[in-house]
Image 1 (cartoon, each protein chain N blue to C red):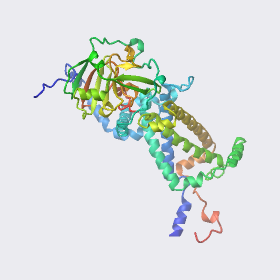
Image 2 (cartoon, each protein chain N blue to C red):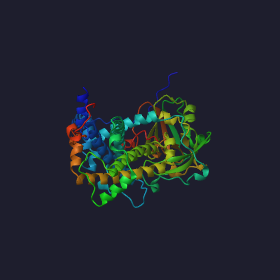
Image 3 (cartoon, chains in turn orange, blue):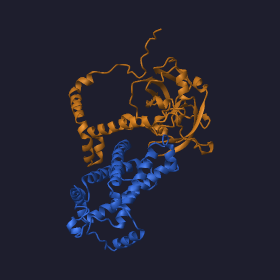
Image 4 (cartoon, rainbow over the protein chains, first blue to last red):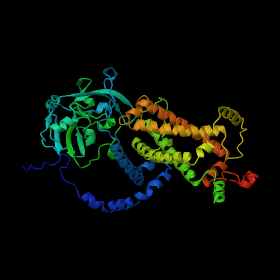
Length: 262
Length: 223
């Protein structure tokens, strides 16, 4: 049976506005011309270190992003699919966990768990949305692991919830696909590589220290991937897409390394 | 044939071209690593009162500092591997950096503090120089290891364990930076006091050995 192709949740509703392209056609051409110079700038970029604002210059930034993309590939090669992150005992757990987001904890907008649904899209057989009740009824796994932030701090946390791998298998996701993208209630976006999604310690977390996670930490559902920097573990997830198309994320758009493995 | 080889050996400059290139590549990569490392450090300081002022860091935001750091680390590592292979294979480390006798280090340190250290012959490293150069090589090797332990504390958890934990690796990485910056200050000040050392690192400097006639009037013909 041929399924009606469901439009991606990630597709813009009104298509792309072409007028902007027409208006800025000349600029787009200039940018492409500039790209030709990229290859020549790599060593030159280093000698141009006259001021710190150099990181913002377009040509330099494109070189640095190319290196970051190279580092993504290196990290994919370094990733050990069955190597577990070190685990700790319950008395080492910090309660509550440390908060971080792209805004202050006072600005967290709580998600109403009763109306909340996890929507599914992309290369998944059964795309029926899940309620919080259904997800909280799934078998749980618990991992006490170190959470490491890109800023440099860390703490030991006790997260539990359904294994992402088992959840993907249950919904009939194509685990040969390359990526899983997440959309969050606060418009945060995140994309995981499939290998990390299938790692035994990657879970859809619903609890912290055995109690349901609270609003600042992603209620009702968040990701917890101990083999990634903290920012990869998206909070307040509302939609998930299994896809072969790479999508830049909230932080990778701003220049942070996408793979962000640890 | 033997005579030609011998002459080539005698004509070898104090700092062969390959070594000079590696020195300056290393200097550049190290400066980028230090400047960007300071910016990364500022996001979560190890010592409460210590923040590096914005004018002395590389990177407008943390992500730019990270981008620079993860570019320069490859340059430093690849260049460093070439340097280590070169240093051992060419015999330069053996000729220039060892032996280091503690008694000589102490004596020459005392002389240096009284500003009476001889440096007429820039081809010959005194014991303090040997200690600093050999020491900074070891520190940079440890710095690379602690850097990997910070970058990959889960994939390379065995390595990170050697530094106790993630924060232990950060602390070692920070102290390594302090040691390298300390070396850099001493190194640059001394080089400025004896400018011909800087010229030698640019042009190659004098032949490493004296001409056979001058050095050894009774040179054995067998050589």
